[in-house]
Image 1 (spheres, rainbow, N blue to C red):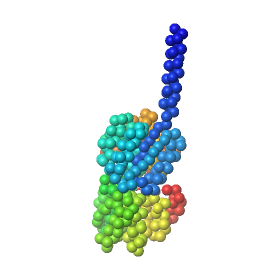
Image 2: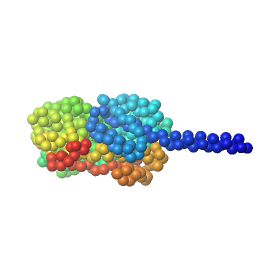
Image 3: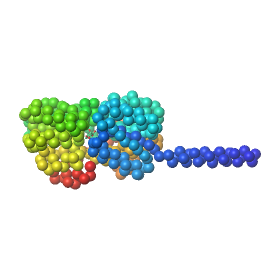
Length: 335
Ligand code: RAM
């Protein structure tokens, strides 16, 4: 009897030791972004870093150099092999990563998309930076005002399969249908794939092909900075108006010299921070990611999960901010 008791005791001790060890194993998050070398994603990684100090998780981050879907698939496969607990991805192709992410989810890995979504079948939750319709609308209002309400405009986008830019552009086109924009013609949409050289070439192509071009909207931080370079190099600052979604650190000089009168963006650090909190809440089982739930996102407060128009669920981080020559100095060191 005594022997059985002490055996039982030893077993209990062993089990509790094992569970302490398990409980102490930090959560691992694999972060995937569109491409390396993009300061927007470097800022988002700072958000993951900040959250990791508060929540105690570990994370690895990577993206393909060429903004490709294949590159992202390889990175995801590596994360699955490493046995991460969650994958948080800004997708280059909303449909292209579904299958590999489904196998991740089959193995119990929680998948969150952020910035540029994955189709609902390949994610649990999407973290949208801001209301997509507003993002589209404010850029049209801005360029319309800058060009005096008439003339040709073009869009310089990122990748043709990137869902965030495509969604914003759809809302831009919807906005342009309004009677007040009847004299504005959207002549073309070109794609620089969020690669600087390609984006500069595309902007140069617009300058060459459309001599009457009055304005450009570039809803990508890579694109808008590249457009500014090309416009300035051609001596066209102020003649071809430029707006879009830009990083203050990259665009400050062009706001100061008149190449870009005003542009927009939300806080990319907050976006990464929120994606991190959502990933951890899913791994801990605090949420399932369904519409109607909410989770605590640290200094951002409680985040509500809502039903997305694609049938999946999503949450929102903040509002776009309008940067001008007057306020850009307050932001250019921040991100
Ligand atoms: C680029 C990327 C990113 C987008 C920003 C605005 O850095 O395309 O996905 O959200 O621009």
